[in-house]
Image (cartoon, rainbow, N blue to C red; front, top):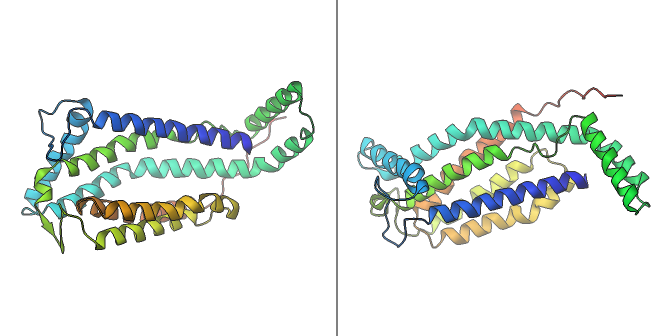
Amino acid sequence: MEQFNVFTYKRKFILIGALVLLVLLSGCGVSGPNATVDANTPGFFNHYIVYPFVYLIQHFAAFFGGSYGLALILLTLLVRLALMPLMMRQYRNQQKMKQKMDVLQPELKLLQDAYRDKKDAESKAKMQQEMMQLYQKHQVNPLAMGCLPLLIQLPILSGLYYAIKFTPEVAAHSFLWFQLGRPDIVLPLLVGIIYFFQYKATQIGMDPMQSKQFAFMGYLSPIMMTVFSLTTPAVIPMYWCVGGVFVILQTLLAKKLYRTKIEPVATVN
């Protein structure tokens, strides 16, 4: 299981690196509190990812009679629906990998116990070799953890975020009880509640030990989102609320669809 965790950490580092790169790209060509993005804005990210969303926001708002709130809700749902097949596929692959690891775990533990007192380099190399043979026997590939769906959705969701931020008409528009361009006190609380239930949804059916490992971030994330939302224009926490509710429903659906266990993998002598 330790080997499996190493690959999981590597996957996290890849995603963090991609996020840093995306932030650098998003800062190219647009800056300042009154910055906007249009068809002439330089930069690949702004021109080909952010601007199409700005265009859709403006046209959806025109369709709804000038309601940028409804336009943003519709666009957020459409983007989430478009990404849903990727996320469902990723969840299915993660479940298959987890179930295979559950089958593999007893043999892996026996192997680790056999080499527990052997600290020399030759024994460690032999243990690694036998461990890889176990992975092959059970058709487990720790590297195949589904980074691609996350790498695809990252620029898309970030593009939508910056489109909302850089559409000047949004800030002057009112929706329901709040003005989209000013901070609101109620929406941050809703964000915290929604992200807390989003965390709880991911815990359904999870191993208790694994659940404890994610508990700290599970409680910290809603608090951080709430605090951050208190100082941002209300349109941002509204966007997070809509996306958060969608993710909760998507998670519950995925857990229901992929609850059944896969058949045991045939062993190779």
